[in-house]
Length: 405
Image (tube, rainbow, N blue to C red):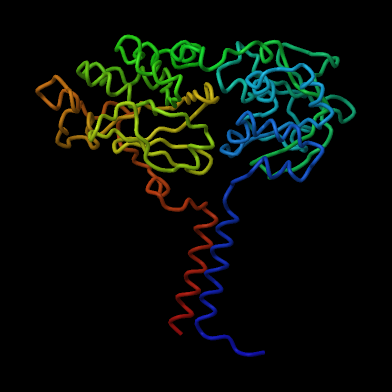
């Protein structure tokens, strides 16, 4: 066998390193998983059509209860419009990991889990929860909370596991479609839906109130028909931010609120693929108020030059309207200091305040401060798990040691 050049060994190690690090990522693709099971092609198709596949893929810990083509035929025979189909299918996606082994070892015999229907805020009360019961004889039943359905004590039963990655994703087959009167309730078309009313019902009432009181609501409404994406801070985020908000001028308040809207429709999948700067409703000519959208593992992060917020839920995602809930108020650098004690930036264009610091109150609480535990991924570098870092250090040590020989 011919002797390899001295430079080959380090190159091989680097290739192994890259491949090993790639294997430590937690990405999964529900569309690809189900593509290997043609008997679930209809279920797979509607996960994509309703954009639920995007939501499943962005989450690290998830369980999908798939129904075969025959079971989906029963659902499609009801001729539900797409928004209702999305609500029904959302009941089949749990925001936790439940592999075949785990569902047969449930403590006290049963547990209740949150579904994506509950996470969107469209479910009233407990209508978005599913109860899993480990029954006698190895049987496991699934039922929508407070609703038994048409199949006895359970809406559906466990059939088999299709694919699992421990503590990451489980794809199970269940016998029947899970549904409820709440999931099948009529859903208004996005064009006819009042944006602020939608926010009020789904955990963003405080933000909706600010839109109405500031006059910014009109701008959001005018853009809704042509396409709009809204990042809506949760009530908790707004409540913790009100002290700083009150220090803004009227123009500053409106600018801040418009900063949370993108003047065109972006689905969750579109946002994940962009990973770049986006203009906002606050942008005016050369006075740009941009946001940066990027993925961080399973999370979608919206960043400004001052702070970052993580997408925590979907209120609606149907062209031309997308409203996503975030965990912080987004702060444009034109209005806020990026670092405590830094000089106040100039006031935004059109501000009536003579003192720029009036619209730059600086950080107030955790929402406005720069995270002290920012990771390398916040700066655009590759996100690597602890095991990947250890492997990298070992291989690099070997490479350096070999090169010094």
